Length: 155
Image (tube, rainbow, N blue to C red; front, side, top):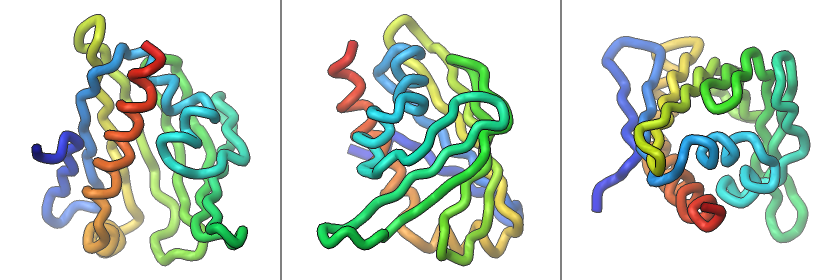
């Protein structure tokens, strides 16, 4: 079975386009990105803040078994249209990647399927390419697979 989440990175551009079709109704896919309890489950992180509104903020944090912070990310929500789009910044702390701008678009395909398209813009081509050297595509596929598995139970 191949990876269901597609990551497209055009040579020489400082952006990624991430696309995934889910076997989930649009409303449930959108909830997976906006309800703290669901985000925490499929991302395997603690949701410290998630203000789903224009100029709202968000912050996620993951700790190890000893309570040490191993991942922390945050940003600002710039646009929020239920079941349609979220525009936000995303910044991982203590990494060289800096802030990125993300345009998330949610689309109903059928009554039981939907599509997420994420257009992610980095400060430079070099930063985008550095991220792609990590197991990024594998990680986002694993996360989206968990999302679909967890949220499907709500249907």
